[in-house]
Image (cartoon, rainbow, N blue to C red):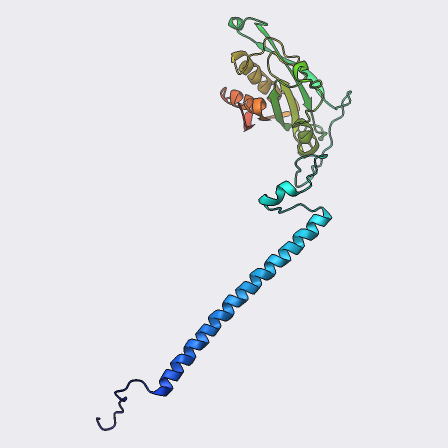
Amino acid sequence: MIEGVPVRDAEGPRLSDRQDASSSKLKLLGVAVSMVAIMLLVSIHGWIIDDVVDDIKKDLGIYDRVPVWERSEWPYITSNSYSYVMELGDYGILETDNDWDSTHHFVSFDLPLSEGGSAPNGVVSLAVWLPDVPPGVKVPVIAEFGPYFDEVSVETPSIEVPGTWLGQMIIDQILPHGYAFAQVSVMGTGRSNHCMDLMGNAEQLGVDAAVTWLGTQEWSNGGVSMIGKSYDGSTPWQAATFGNEYLKTIVPISGL
């Protein structure tokens, strides 16, 4: 031993040091266990609360935030519209002289003689619904083009009647925001003349002619969009191939 400098015994740390180390370890272990316990309690509490809230919502008929795996068990409402806008629009529909507030029009265009049939006098049948906006206000158009309007083979009503699969929803919820809506029969269907030409040249020319007509009416602002599903989800692609200046947007859904 050097004078004035304490040294530990050869046996190792003193008993008090070992006790301090053990005490620190126990404290750390206690803190860790406490934190785990708190987290478990919070999780369990959250699960219980979520289950209670879900049960209350289910009893009240509130169906938001339904987990995917539970959706098949919920009593879905099927008697109303299948989708809703977040805010209602300011405009009503412009009334006309029929029960559906629509107007019917024929659009003529040049059909190449090589197409035979009704060439050269192609005619497209369409119906239009307008919002009741102030005089001079021009509006954009949403249009659905397809073979199912006024078509005996699928027992659909006149083209002046909104389609239950899409048209009625657009008229009820989108038109009030200042949009016109149109239903257009492709060639050889409904009251459009010529022959049914599945995705063919005559059909494409008729689609393009109708887009131009919709974009050039006095009530139109020149912006035409197309939407549809299945067959009606393919016609927007046809229109897009022409680079028509009036076609601004297409929303094709599950096209052929």
